[in-house]
Image (cartoon, rainbow, N blue to C red; front, side, top):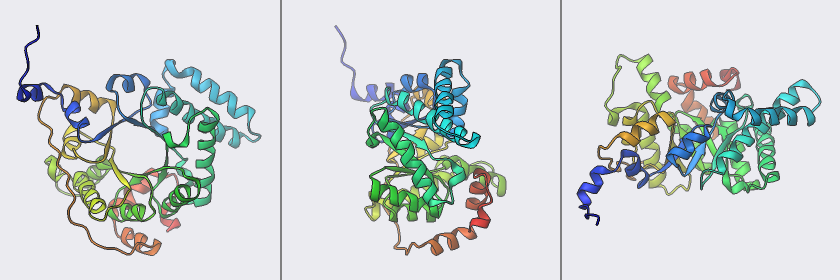
Length: 317
């Protein structure tokens, strides 16, 4: 006969991960199917670097082989073959991931298109077509786009004209977040860890308490603004460096977390309390000129985005 466990003792037995799942949608930031099965997230996110890491594993060699065959069979020039191969590979991983989660998978458009709105829209629709050809509804897919002005407008067009849900990535600033909300995209992914990295590299302060972490502060400000003005766009904190950042954002709409940090959270039995509440905010006029004027003097945004995108973003401004 089992002995009833008092609620307070049951709470102490729960892992930080289990507690977090009660107030935030937990998303796995990986292309590794085994990690997804182990931690049972609602959704999953992928990006080219995660897919590359997974594709190097013998377990997933068959997906790479299938993508190469597809690329060769469906294009003429070498450049077209590579493009089709990569799109097929990203979708193949997404299809396998969707077999293991109840929610959605994020698949990224080539970052080299980040300042070409029409090219991003075209590529996104091609990815969606590949999913639909495999029997997967577009409602189970989030298309990841760079949060440049052009990327945000591509997201607006995909959402409004094609019913394609978008996940705006490479987001480092409040201005980008406001522009995304005004474009009525589904979701944004502000990069918590990248913001912390920049501050540690460019200021005298090298250590931060979780509540003072610049990335945590940035996401909290964005979240509060969205909730104050009832934007339907949801916030998914991303690019975490430690579990302290994750726990400090408990209550955020979604958090996408690497397998390593998911493992730490599953072994952590400290208390996790939701910390995000709707407060603050201000009315802003968001145009392309306002966004780029605001960002032009934002060294953090410029350096983070410039180091990520494979072209000179300053020229594009």
